[in-house]
Length: 291
Picture 1 (cartoon, rainbow, N blue to C red):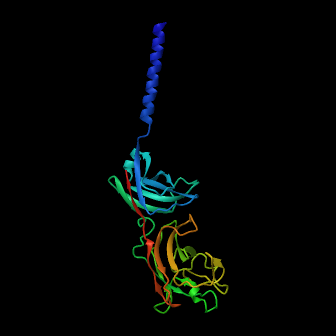
Picture 2 (tube, rainbow, N blue to C red; picture 1 turned 180 degrees about the vertical axis):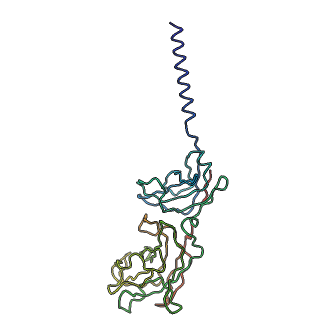
Picture 3 (tube, helix red, strand yellow; picture 1 turned 90 degrees about the horizontal axis):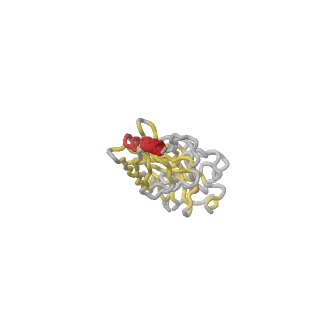
């Protein structure tokens, strides 16, 4: 009887050991991926950042995050990480039913050995050669006494007006947006994707005149209503004009971190005369990813 009990206990022990070994053999081999990124801003409650490694041409999530304090580390499958050829960072809805990356990709870079230098120019657009001009005018009404209350991204220095902005085509998931900053508060001029066409609010702006829409270029007349505590019409001289690059769908009513062009309107600016913009405060984002 004692011998039978001993054999039974031995069998249970061998079985348990076998199951434990099987579990160990089936456990995933994990490794860390480390992100050290600069210039990202908090997205708010409705959106998160999500990292992706590209393995055999397919995206594999490395996890989501909301904090923009770096470095940060994430754990992923070691075999997939070793085989990854590229890293991509996207902006995703917080409650995202789609397992694939959104169009709104903000950083990307290829792995070289155990690191990847990622930047926004590789995936959003390269703004290093961006330039712009604008005029002060209010073409949406017939009042010639408020011309300094409108800004239009037009270059009329050669006679006939042409597009005042020289900007690269954006990748899917992004739009341009113009702004005027009133005492520290930015007010939109509208969003657009084509510098040769009117912006998206050309017919619906609450600030434009009632006589007509503006010309077929981005811009805005601030001749009706109130915004940022300022009654319109107003004087845009010594206000800052900004072109930003916005996620689409947009995470916030405020300007996004990418701002390739900006300029303070001179206090002696002449109406209807082309004024050149300068380089904005944030032309690109970058960082390093290591495995």
